[in-house]
Length: 269
Image (cartoon, rainbow, N blue to C red; front, side):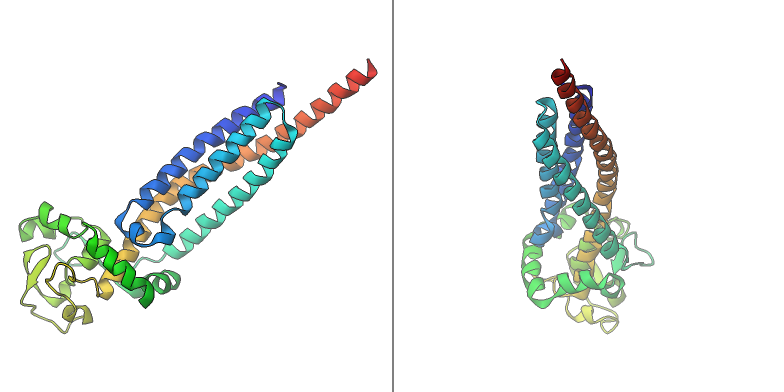
């Protein structure tokens, strides 16, 4: 195996290692309650990681066994995957840039408004057809029941840093003035006209605020928070992959030159 092919093999092994955190980020996203309820958001990152793993493996095999055709296919496929990963990153940053959260006096957690998020996210997630399925899925999750296990008194709950999903779906908006009994049970609102969601709140554990705009906004807040965390991993991975790809292209050209020179010498002899 020539020097250039050795370099290419090492680079492809590096790219193969990069696919692991991408797949891990995909699995982490897929197992979040909100992403479990939005199926199209669950697996794209994981699938990208798997494709990068397979392409890197093909490139490693091509370099190790000096299969120029396989190396050329690797370079084409890796370029396509890097472009696709960049498109996903740009799209994710664009739709998760707006933040619909706002602070609430006397509360450690934040609450959320729908109009504070990107139009694409609002239209896709809160569409009536989509929301009915998402709502049922959220009601079956353990996001809200977990609160009653972790917090007993009002003081404990008010200083808790609960997730956006829990803030929007598991309790009524603070402006309504409901009195705390437990995280999923609130009574006697002081100001029920403060927000349309005040009248939608129901202590039935299968209803709570799942019909509220605050729940829709909380779901978007969760998606924004999780995808922006995953984006950090993707940015690091794509930078490494671009670096690997540029060097691999140079090594591939050098390997072709070495092969031509070797054939020339054999013909000369």
